Amino acid sequence: MRVVTFNVKFGSAGDGRADNRLLAETCAGLKADILALQEVDRRATRSGLADQVRLVARATGMSAAFGEAARRGPFRRYGNVLLGRGALSDVETLALSRPEEGEFRVAVLARVTLESGVGGIAGDGDGTVSVAATHLSFRKGEGAAQLDAVVEALGRRPLPRVLLGDLNLPPEVVEPALAAAGYRIASTGPTFPARTPRTRIDYVAVEGLQVVSAEVLETPLSDHRPVVAEVRGELG
Image (cartoon, rainbow, N blue to C red; front, side):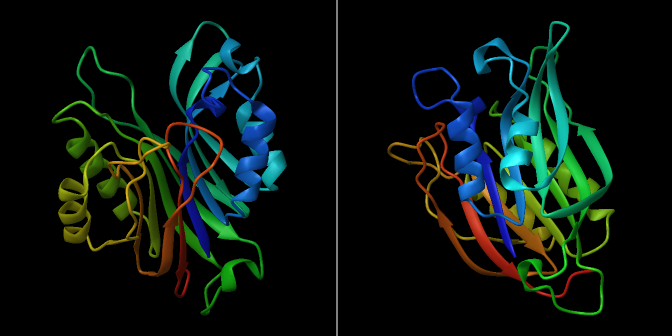
């Protein structure tokens, strides 16, 4: 099963403007079975009033769930997207704690039932995995508490579990926190900034599954690089 997390920065190709066609093509090219996207627009002027959730879902052929983190005016929405190559169920948008002046942060949680034959599903289950996709705060002291909240919420769902996102936290914070909760983290190099990555803030982590391989890819979009991991194991 191929799982990917990617902060797409509303499809920006580096000039501050969105390239929606390139966004759709890039996401389709990742060939993910489960895909988490951060900083996605719906009906925003900067992205040509496009519904980027629908564009990516159509390009990838995946089901999509949008977690709204911010609302600007009557139409513009902004947030995270969880996509799966199959049906999504038990979808929840979890609001995360924030200070009065901080940016709203959320996690999208769902059960993803993969299509038959996708990802080399093994076992007697129905090919279902619990997934959380999130984008945490970069402010000191906020992100770690938000991560704990996401882990707790995902832990209430059946195994196996996958946690994906731009956590805005360094490995020395993320690794012990997720290890204590029973997760294995896909090992990669730095993911940010995209042109010359120096720090690792984007992660794939699994519980009840094994990470077979992982890599950070270079794309023509965003100020982040996507993390791609191949995972295997018996699904629910």
